[in-house]
Length: 561
Image (cartoon, rainbow, N blue to C red; front, side, top):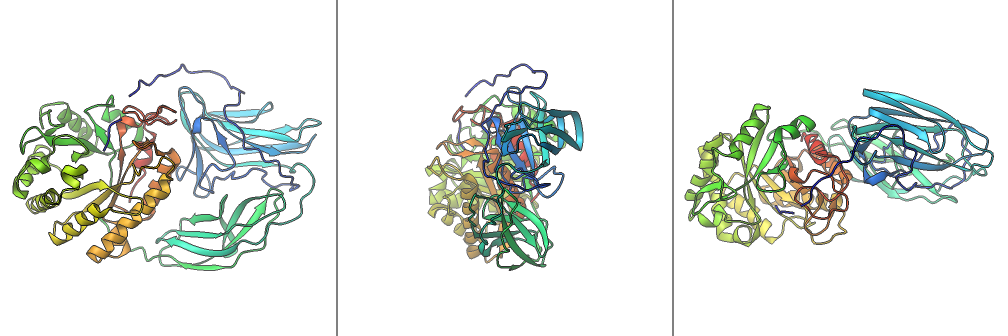
């Protein structure tokens, strides 16, 4: 893992409803004439993105829980300096009455039309419905609707947002063309991923409706979707229809039959454990983070050599009797636990300093004994450990010994990756784990620092993880489910060393993918950086992007495997 500094400032809590537009609107000027239809694009957020909406500060994301209907909802991360205002502009008719409604959850959630009527709720722990009506002016042809939270009041949620009334402009009666080539791009025991050829329209396609038999089960703003909530080992028939702003629907695509997997997912070790580093980055109180997010596990970094084959925190703080031990005690008192990260990118490491697997196992054992550990993680990086065949084998041999001496102990290897899966050194590490019968429980990859700032971090992470799965299958002879159950993902929140950006939405999607594929472990670097500083670049105390405090940790806590 890497190091990246900035002091977080907070502004005072504001009062009242601000009508200032904080984000540019996604303007829909296409004509339509659908009465009684929802004029909003992606009002149920089932597209899985905020497509159609513009959210101030990039603070709007789509989450899988809590939702009002379907499988997705909007989360607006209102903070001390931004109320997470999400807007959408639609074409309307002059001198016409419209009804705007939404189901919302949170403290001080506002719904309204810019320059017109609004309504709000003070606080609700469950979804409640807000409704407001407005009448357009004599020459008005567009209206901007909005949702926002309030400063310092935390994340709000919204779902099933609807604007009912006639579309603006002249009547459009031409339907989009038929979607083609519907095909399956992946499946699990409870999901089916679909893709198709995009439709065209005389004005523009605004989305797609996904049908299971004759029932609509999802919507998408793009020509792909993952249908969730399915039953294992069950046959389903899907088709797609495109629609435009006027509500015109295309003919149905070809039908596609998909049978979900049988759902025999191996049970075992599951861990959501973001990195907490007490060596820099204004370390937060672990219990404060736990209370705010529900986090239970942390990966505590780093165990290094204090000279020779002697383990210590950061190579300088004793194993016991210091801040590390007191932090671990507070985590456990709050119902959590830790896994130590042994190694890392830099520093004087145990792997090269301990001369034999037996000596290295003895160093690991000192750490295990100090805390009565359930798991240990060896973060094997750089040329001194990862790209060193002798040290690779020494680490694997040591982990084999400590597993034999500590029944039930889980062993984790964490290492870098390419976007397509393990590098040659990663492949060697896996091959040697098999050859030496090391019994590694979890192979965790770090899918970041790929070297290209424009990398799609969700796509890159999934591609890298699928590459690891294929390698584990070919090496150990496992099936898909067993391979996934031995995989971990350890990302980097916000801006990485090579200027890639993992957004809140990226990490939510990664978490959801990890859950649907039942992997073993989800982590990120680091809780120290899980604070917002939009435009801040690479920092050690914040993520470099707009976010609420501990938002990545909260998302990670939703990993259940």
